[in-house]
Amino acid sequence: MFSKKKIIIAYTVEKCKKCGMMRKRKFTEGDVLFTESSNCTSCDGMTSVEKIFGETIE
Amino acid sequence: MSDDTNPLMMIIWIIPIIIFVFYGQRIQLYITSSEIKKAIKKLDSFKVESRTELINYIKTNLKPKDDLIKKIDRFLDYFTIMPVDMDPNGIIDKVRHTVRSREDYTREHVKLLSPEISNLELTKVQTLLELASSLQMIYKIVNHMYLTAKKQNNYPLILPLQILLPFIMEQAEAMKEAIPAFKAGQPVGDGIGSMVVGKMMLDSKKETVAFQTVLAKTEFENRTLFLLKAEGPASTVGRPADALETIVSSNKLDVIIMIDAALKMEGEDSATVSQGFGAAIGGIGFDRFQIEAIATSNNIPVFSIVVKQSVKEAITLMTKEIADQADTVSSQVYEMIQENTKEGQSVLIIGVGNTVGVTQ
Image (cartoon, rainbow over all chains, first blue to last red; front, top):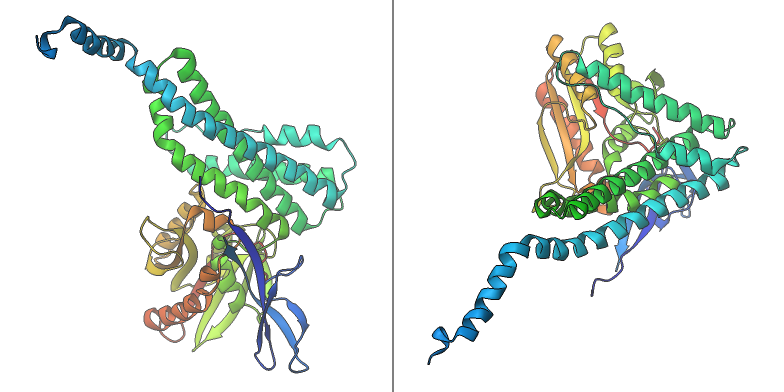
């Protein structure tokens, strides 16, 4: 009766192949593990998807 | 006169006893049925929701030409008759044949809905179809058991259902919650094995070695590593046993290491990593049988590393805790290779599990 509804939010972690910087953002349709994702924000390298996971919010 | 000898009090005591002797089972049946009725209502809503989600997904992504709803309903009603097991000799081949025929049939008929469908979408629709069809089957069976007990006014008949219902509901809820992950092509907990091996084979040349299964060859400290997984990012488990047969026919393997998700026991922490012996692979059993048979006839030891998780975690979006274990599993694989092989030997590493959202 008092159980709270749990919401799962999907996140994608990107890792720069050049400087190794990691960035966590919300999952977007089309994200696939280990594929190239976007340009690195701290260097001119490319990032790839390192992890995709869900976190539960109550 | 005390209460004990008062005839009125005696009647008040005796009447409920008589009622319970003659109608006890029926009363229990009414109490239990209200709980079961609630569960059946929930199962019915899961069944309807999964069907609607499937139809909407196909309508939006595949733009089918023909009458979709009739065909989908026919698929959902499909059943599989398992081979007779009175004579178990050769039953593995029969089960494999039946299951694969069903998979092939579904694949071909989903293709007919939209001939231009990509392989990725095809596997997603196949998985969604399996989920919706399983939820429909669960609803039908539970409803049948409940109605039969009610019709016969037979309380013992409802007992097995009452005992099994919490487990059935856990499975059904997991299946219902798995739908969004498969629709979005997100990795699920079961994909941890594929994730580890997929990362290991990133810079190597890949080749298709069996249906929806890829193989890569690499080196590690003067050992040859054969890396095997289902072909991602499609929603498939591939055919690792068929692949093993092909690999063994042209290579000498010294060790097989299998990485998979495993169901945790109550009280065990989720995402714990364990090592063991034997083929770590789920399913009906014919893949495990085939792997064990090949390993035995070629005298290859089989080691396994598993990541513990619940039923729900295994088929829904991978949790952070499970994803964070990928590097731990990877380092354990390399340790296992160092400890169990010598230089010049060959190791096959199989990433078992659904590879949705995991490329290689």
